[in-house]
Image 1: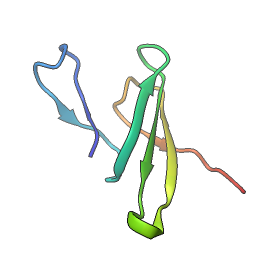
Image 2 (image 1 turned 45 degrees about the horizontal axis):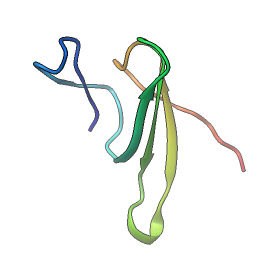
Image 3 (image 1 turned 180 degrees about the horizontal axis):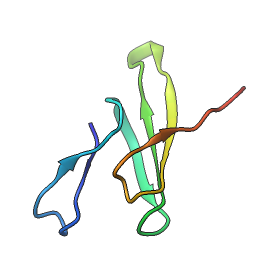
Image 4 (image 1 turned 120 degrees about the horizontal axis):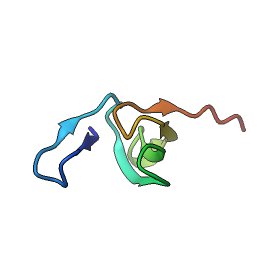
Length: 66
């Protein structure tokens, strides 16, 4: 799961995001960010990109069409 802090890391709370092997979480400002995770594992890797616009309270899947 992903967690967020609003007090410099003194405490952490889980956010509304699916469970995955998260490889990257980054923010461009205080409210906008992205997270990339592997939802398959092993040889069945299924990478997905999520975004947040509410400082990490919730994450939304980015639809990527090949």
